[in-house]
Length: 152
Image 1 (cartoon, one colour):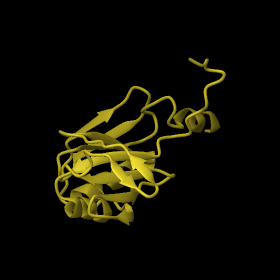
Image 2 (cartoon, one colour):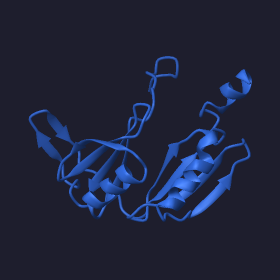
Image 3 (cartoon, one colour):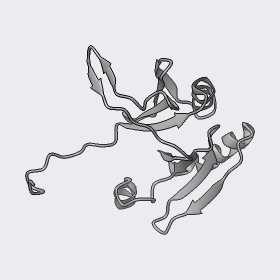
Image 4 (cartoon, one colour):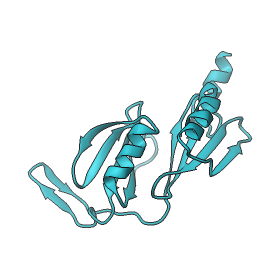
C-alpha cells in the first residue's frame, strides 16, 4: 500500500446516483422543482447538471444490475434499494427562499437540522421517498464555511 505522500488526490465527487421507479416522473421533479437541467436522457438513466461540476444520475430501478458492455468500454453493474440520501449545497441566504419555493410546490419538509458548526439542513422526500437535503455551509469542516468565516 502506498503512503499518503504518494497517494493521488481525489478532486471531488463527480456523480451521485439515485435509483427510481419512474424515470420520467423523477426527471420532471428534479427539473421542474429543484431546477436541475438534463444533460443526457436514455431509457436507462437521466443525467442532471447539479452545479459546480456535479452530476445527479437518475437510474431506472432494475435497469443497471448487469454489466453494460458498449464500444466505449464496460460499466460494472450497480444498484441501490430503499430510501437513499443525497444533499445539495446551498448558500445560507438561500435557506428561506428554498423553504418558500418547496412550500409553493406543495413539498413538505421531512426534517430540519441546525448543526453545531453553524450550518442548517432542510430535508424533503422526492417522489421515490429518497431523503433529499439542502445544506448551508457549516455542516462539514470542508464545506468552505471556515474560509468564509476567516474572510469576514
